[in-house]
Image (cartoon, rainbow, N blue to C red; front, side, top):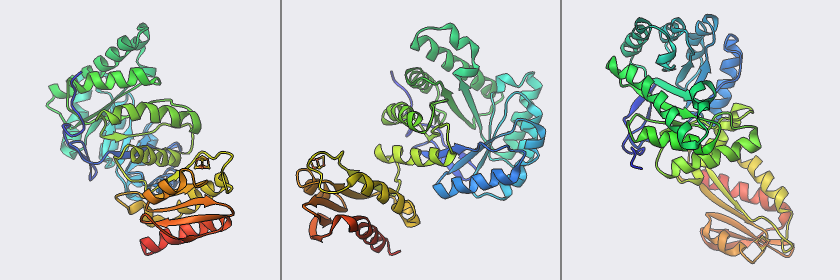
Length: 361
Ligand code: SF4
């Protein structure tokens, strides 16, 4: 199937973050606070910013929350997206409050004049609209039993919403077509991308808890990203949204699309393991997550932590920094060369100090 890849999509500007046209795949998340409580919402957005979130979405279920959008916007640094269902007046208020993008399905707003009113204001504010079709709320999808039937229905629904905007000469659009199963989602995105080159917001919706949701999102988003689809992603987890951002960066890093700052290469351990590698690697993840300068690296620093001399020296040599376990010791490598030996209880301390030295921090 031929489809527009991320290098061929239109560029759109979401409050200064450009997505589409081959720009880096942007990481986004969504708050789970009550948006009427603007202070808690801002607090969570600041945590998301700290984690590297580049675009944040808040749901505006009522006018009270819409009236908070401006306050929230003033207190955060990243672009703010307003998620609105059905009520066009909330969309109009959100635009007035200065949000950077709307997520709204024009087919659900009601009469043509309501859609026109929202489009007119979005045009004059210069903000894009994301059409987000979701299998959970699209009843017709459930009339189909096959993946291809469900996917075609999702894509058809997205096209119907897109055409409403196109008929009003509005093309500042991003699109998502989410389902909770991978095959339907991937197929629906491909069908849509075969018809239009609007930038795609990828996600597997209702993916599950931090463990199962990470696996499902990685498998689903991984397939699509690897094939060249997707201009921005949200990993949906039933968890603290900060975890969504961390997962998104690691996923994009593993696909060679973005840097999460550090790539830790560690072996699965076996009877040859010469150190308490599981504990060491967890400690290493915890300690390196505190090094802010790592997040600025365009290319991740590769750190290998290996249990023995079987595969250890090869991986450690190949990394920027590495340790290969030996009898009550570890052979330390930097840039492919042996530079010394370190006892296992000092591995984390030594590696962290070497990383900080490289970063000048
Ligand atoms: Fe086992 Fe060594 Fe391989 Fe680690 S590197 S899994 S300790 S053989």
